[in-house]
Amino acid sequence: MSPTRRYVSPLREQAAARTRTLILEHATELFAERGYGRVTVADIASAAGVASKTVFASVGSKSDILNRVVDRAVIASGYEQTMRDLLELRSPDEVLKALAQGTRLGNEGQFAVIEAVHKALPVHEDSEALWERMTAAYREALHTAARHLHTLTPPPPHSAKETGDLLWYWFGPTGWRTLVVENGWSWDRAEEVLRDTAVATLR
Image (cartoon, rainbow, N blue to C red; front, top):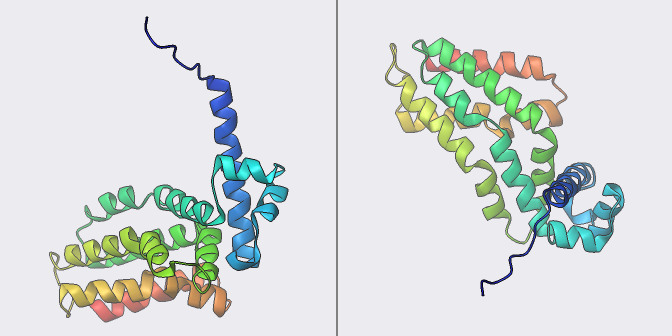
């Protein structure tokens, strides 16, 4: 006799997915507003309107929640399509303009996640690995853009490695956060200045 298969209800799975999404969204907001160290699973459960045991069953511990938040942000960033479009550009100025706009949209759109991670770093049990997971693909994308710039005319006056490092300095999350969060710049002004600085330096 064949073993009995457990019936899985599509509606139940959809409800569970919605619950996970709700928990992660509220956790992101709380981590960004209060800081990871000041938020408890009970706080997240209360904000999401569920029991604490539901949070543990659906998403896991507070550390698990932050990891899931980071994973969702990387997927949602859309950087792969942005990079495909950028690699089709044949003018250095167009590439730098696209980088400024694309990284601005990514940082602005994922602002709560970036704040959540930034505030978690001083207290997270494995902050170095967390930051690496958050930024590895981002950093590699900017170094890919740098290598592309070196195939164009005129190429930047630095090595490809140094060009990538400069792009990370200008267009990485720390650059955006320094101007917008710490100094109160508008996103528009930050994009304009970072773009113009990159163009002027790399010509």
